[in-house]
Image (cartoon, rainbow, N blue to C red):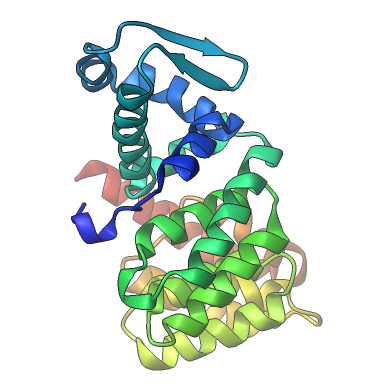
Length: 253
């Protein structure tokens, strides 16, 4: 990660982060997956004591240096696809703390200095943990800052599928117009078609058929197309057959 993409914290802010329960959880996680890096970072410390939700170290200056190293490791984790593995390790309240911090970060940091991947990953984690209001707030801020960034719009649309499928459909309509060759946008639009009231089954079938013909499938497709089994049973059977055939052919390769 480029140095411009890293957070620059003052000493009081750094101490506050290390004292936060969320960062303690990340510390424990890192102790498992980054043993070598952390061992090297702490070798120079005379003592390390995790008490409650904070670190007690003999040398305050070294503690700050160490916490900076650890925080960079945590931030690096949040800046990769591996960040999604953190989701089951966090409680809803911890995800909410992280979202609150990120909302302020997005509001206060200039666009050119914003770490987009970090913020979008945190919004995704919050969405998965059920902190929808805060996650939506982050997504809305990102959409305003990056009106032409397709993956941000797509992630926001996906997060809206259950709570506001009509708005999700509008987002994916626009994405399909701009990127007609991207089947994942058609796939999610099909899900939105099914979830809107009243459902638009024929349009969903058309989008899903297009996805399979283009060689795209989703692992959740059988669950997503299940509403068709009642309302469009013949289309459901046809899509299911195409899906299973395509999946079998892909597994044989």
